[in-house]
Image (cartoon, rainbow, N blue to C red; front, side, top):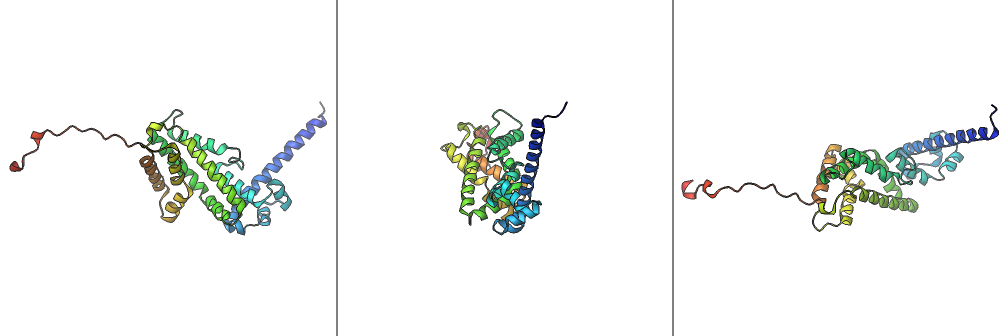
Length: 243
């Protein structure tokens, strides 16, 4: 049977789309390499296009700007998808990682959930730490990136709020609101804490994860009731005169 023109066009379109997607991904990878070497302000679109092996026009057609490439680099580093944050897939991925860590689809033990959150954040920070610094430094000199950074912080808070959603209010420390619990998690499980302790103080990743888990349990959860002990009979304690 002869191939119809419509079928040929469809195949050509699919092939063209595949080429464009490969170019977009090469540009994201190349941008990450150039950003790491030269910083955001030092990197040029010409250098990124050359590293990716594409024309400058292809870069602009694929991404439009260096700022868009920085955002795509962050999203790609976090999830392997250059549009994961924009498509709101990042929050779902974190929740899935927490469920996998605690191996439960129902509400887990609150201590186990917070330890799982610490483990997930350690994993995220390990791969995204350098990109956080890029964003922080770029936001200081570019108002549009500063806007992106603020948007990403709002998304990070929504993600953390969703991760805490499985905790019953009764598990929280007395007087601690859910909003305050999320704010505490936002600060402790944040880029600044990771940078200060791991890169500044030389904490190992295991040490950082243990610190974070301990802080979260101590600051967010209702203290455990003390284990009751049998009272010591009075006649088992010698009087002063008998000692």
